[in-house]
Amino acid sequence: MERIEESIKKYFDKSVTDRERAIFEGGIALGAIYHQFIGIPIIKDKAIIEALEKVISKSMGLQPYRESVEVKINFDLIKGEKRHAYDYETLKGKHLDVKVKTKYGNSRAIVRMRYIPEIDFTLMYIEKIEKLRSK
Amino acid sequence: MERIEESIKKYFDKSVTDRERAIFEGGIALGAIYHQFIGIPIIKDKAIIEALEKVISKSMGLQPYRESVEVKINFDLIKGEKRHAYDYETLKGKHLDVKVKTKYGNSRAIVRMRYIPEIDFTLMYIEKIEKLRSK
Amino acid sequence: MERIEESIKKYFDKSVTDRERAIFEGGIALGAIYHQFIGIPIIKDKAIIEALEKVISKSMGLQPYRESVEVKINFDLIKGEKRHAYDYETLKGKHLDVKVKTKYGNSRAIVRMRYIPEIDFTLMYIEKIEKLRSK
Amino acid sequence: MERIEESIKKYFDKSVTDRERAIFEGGIALGAIYHQFIGIPIIKDKAIIEALEKVISKSMGLQPYRESVEVKINFDLIKGEKRHAYDYETLKGKHLDVKVKTKYGNSRAIVRMRYIPEIDFTLMYIEKIEKLRSK
Image (cartoon, rainbow over all chains, first blue to last red; front, side, top):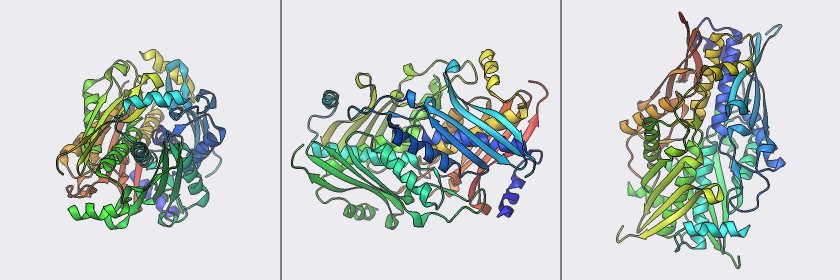
C-alpha cells in the first residue's frame, strides 16, 4: 500500500533527504529499544538471553523502514546462575549492543547503541551511511 | 542459598502467612508484566507472537517464588498482516491473558490478568489459592 | 458506582479475605511502579526529582484501592549536576524508596520497595497490615 | 566539558553533518518518549496531566542536544472523572502531541509525534529543520 507511505510525506519538511529520513528512523529505533526493554529480569542463561535478543530484533524490526535489527546482550556482564530467589538482575543499557539498519529510498543508515566505558554511557551513534544504487 | 531468603523475612510484617506471601508475589508479577511489556510492536504473525509469549514467561519467571508464568497473547485481537510500513500495532492490556502460579511455603496462589469486556478493563485477580501438603 | 466493584468479586477465589485483597493490590502497585518508571533520565536537581516523585505518586495512586503512594527518590545516590551533554543517568531500582498503602474492606496493607544493600536488591515487601474498625 | 563531546565524535561516520546529527537526536527523543511513558495510569484531571507533561518534558530534555521538549497530552481524548475503582485508563500514543527541538552545531531539528487519524497511527516526523547563524 505505497499510497499510505506517500501520504505521510506531507507531514515531513520538504527539504528532508532520503539519507536524513533513514537517519531519523534509526534514531527512533534506538530510543525505542532502550526505553522499552530496560528493566526485564535476566540471568546468565543462553536460552533466555537468545530468546530475548530475538524478540527485541523481531518486534522492533516491525517499525517502518527497518531493514534489520541485530541485538547482542553482553553475556559476560550478566551475573552467574541463579542461586537463590532474589539472585537475578534486570536488563540495563550496558548489556546492550544493538545495530539497526534502516533503508529509505536511496539510502541506508547503520546506527548503533552500545556501552562506552570511557564515558560510562550507553551511546547511540550513526556508524555508517550508505548510498544505494536504486530504490 | 536458603540463608538469604531467611534473612529477608525480617523485613516482612511478622503476621504475614505463607498464603499471603504467595498472593503478594502474584500481585507483583502481574503489575510488572503489564508495565514492562505494554508498547512492544506486534503484528498477526505466529512466530513473533509465540516468541514474545515465551520471553515474557521465561524472564518474569525469574522473579522470586514464581512457579510458572503462562502467557497467551490474544491472536484474534491483533490486526492482520503488515501491508505497509506503518501497519502494525503495539501490545496492549486487552491482548494479554496471563496466569502466574506462585508458591511460598505451604501455599500456591494462581493469579490472572485478562481483559474483561464488561468493564472494559484488563483485570488482575486472584483465581485460586491452594494449600500444599508440605513445603 | 459500587455495582461494578461488586461485579468484579466473582472473578476472585471466594476464600480471599479483605486482608489478602489489600496485600494483592499492594503487590501489583510495586511491580507496576518499578517496571513503568525505570529508565527515565534523571539528574541531581531537586525540581526534576520532586516532580517525578509527585507524578509517580499521583498516577499510580489511580489504580484500585490505593490509599496513598509515597515515593522518595534517593537524592544522594544520583550523580552530580550535568557538566556535558552525556552527563545524566537513568532511574534505577536502587534510587527508589516507595511506600504504598492499600485499603480494601476492613484491612489496610502497607507495602514497601527499597534497595537493600545486604542482598544488592531492590526488595518489595509487606511492611505492615492493619485491621480497620469499619469499612 | 567540551572534550567529552568531542571524543564521542569518533564513533560517528565522518560524513555526518550537523543537520543530520540534530535529526538523529530528534529521532532518539521521540522513540524514547513513546516507549518510556506509554502505560502510565491517567484520568481527566488537569493537575495530574499537567504534572505528567512537565515530567516528560523535563526528564527527556536531559538527553543530549535537546533544546526543548514540549508535551501536550490530548485532554479531550481522556475518559471522564473516576467514578469507581477501575475507572481510569493508561497513556497511549493517541494521547500524545510532542514537539522536540534538538540543536547540534549550526542546525536545529524540530521533530514531532502525534496521532494521525487518517492512518490510525501515532506518527513521528521531521517537522522543520533550521540553519543557525553560528554555533
